[in-house]
Amino acid sequence: MAFETLIRPSLISRHPLISSITIRFKTTSAQYVDSRTRDPTYEKLMKSYKNLLKVYSIQDLILANPKNPTLPLDILSKLAQKLHLNRGALSFLRKYPHIFTLFYNRLKCQPFCKLTETAAQIVRNEALAVNASKDIVVERLVRLLLVASSKELPLRAIFKVWRELGLPDDFEKSVIAQNPDIFILVNNANEPNTHILKLVARNVDFNMSSSVENWRREECGPYEEVGVKKKTRAGVKGLEKRAVGIVHEFLSLTVEKMVEVEKISHFRKWFGIDLNIRDLFLDHPGIFYLSTKGNRHMVFLREAYERGCLIDPNPVYDARRKLLDLVIMGRRGILSDGSEKKSFDRSEEAGLQEDDED
Image (tube, rainbow, N blue to C red; front, side):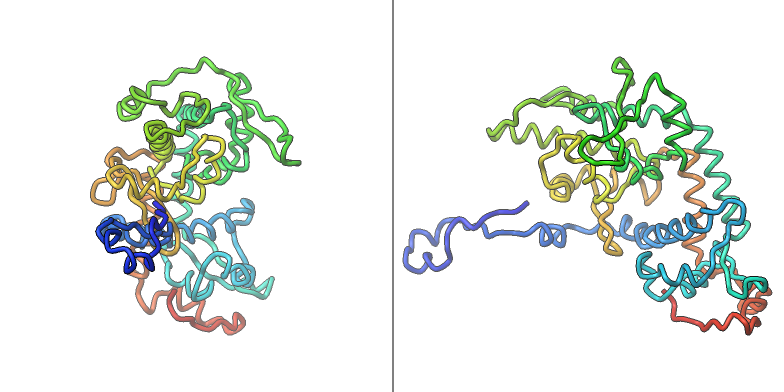
């Protein structure tokens, strides 16, 4: 939390009585983040997870063409900086041979990459798990809309967290369009060519977790509408408590009970949160854990984790965890003279050179 300086330091020497007064100097949000207590369990998880996010980015590019799920290496190399592949695309791919396969396409005279059969099977298993949980996905979207004061959210914000919410990649058609009695898409009057997702069924009632119910007993709960902002200390405390309840509910709706802080920020206005999100997490370390590993500010719901794993896992999480296991495995289990590596290295036409590890 940022504190303003109450007294100028130059006045202290001239006024001895002032020296006995406690002085609070201004603290920036960045300094507040840096001063937090690190939890080694979450930091260890994030060390691997930050690379999993890069794997997801490459995986999405490869699967963009379902008929031919491959990607030219030169295209990936051009996107290396944007994808934060610090040592280059080739180095990153070679770092995870259990996930990516490199091969030379003689017809197109250039190297390509694709998913290994193991990684491709994990993708298929995740898709099956997502499709099998359509009812749960609908409930998550309804809960998310109920948190918003206007019971509506911009579609672009939901697109940013589609993976976190366990939505199908075509959720606009397979979930929203398939439930016209619950959802409706309307044009966004404030932003041309964008849409707003609205909740049609206002009488939907879901049982909330006991922790959220406790937040609702006093002040404003995450699903209650808020009127004029209160300026009293008790009023501000109540709004902070409501904000904690909202973010708690948001995280509980995600598959892995974690999300990037930047993505939550896209919902602030719609949720009626008028507080610094990062400071909110730091002010409540018993509820949330904020990690900044790899320059990504990721927040975890503490009560959902034990020793770096979900206490109550779900099928989608289980599938994703298998991909994370491959990331953690790295090059282990691959022989230095493996046939797959040899066939690629022998290809003189590829003209590729080994990079340092990422």
